[in-house]
Image (cartoon, rainbow, N blue to C red; front, side, top):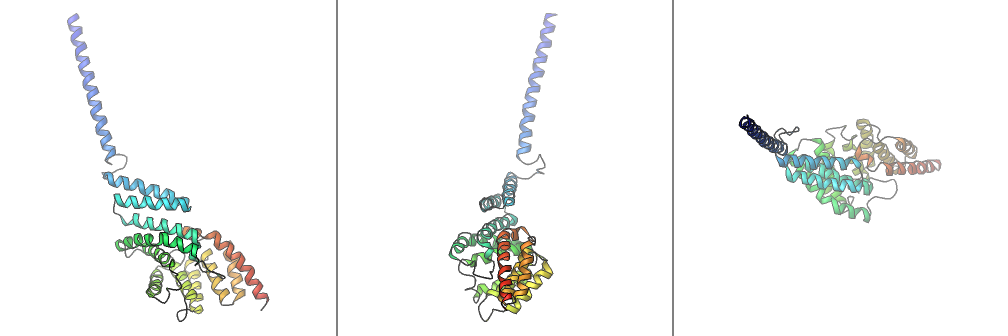
Length: 294
């Protein structure tokens, strides 16, 4: 009986060892399964693809915060994602993040009814980020040449990159011709970013020197932006600026008054939305004052 009991004990011990060994083997395989992306929805993705996904998610998380600091860091995460996985979306997102950084700090280089955003402090910011943003957006657009969203990102990047040299001064150069071409290309998707193609072309005709300057073409495009893209804060503000400079003060006051309370049409507009509201309020008072003196 003692021998039989000892034999049974040895068998149990052996079985326990086998179970521990099998469990360790299963645990190691399970870890490998997850780490290589086969588990948790990985669908067989490579480790580099998973790292790119994590970097991209962090980039989007930071981009949604919409601060200068968070967008700047977001750009680095998107560039890191591209290093892991060469997808053009990562490049575009990086450029978008840098554009947001510039937009928030320079009021998007928007046209003004008085003065200008083309000042030394703003030029330093465009110089710091503009060329890198254009490089990223250009590379992304080459991979997605027919995507209007990629074109819109590149257009913003190009404009900011040129702005460090004085955008108005470059209106009569090749940069001015390219600006017009990009704006017209964006008009092929009329409602994109609240009619941004019309808004940009209107700004060009308003600010360009002779012989390209045309306030008639400027107001025409601003009205088209309102018609095609809706009555967003940017579109109303720009129409107010052009009307003010055409000395159509009653119309300017109406546009500015509506702009001050209008919603922003996109997150891009919101980047300089507070500035536009403040300028619209100031423009409304100025336009009323000028109109009363007519």
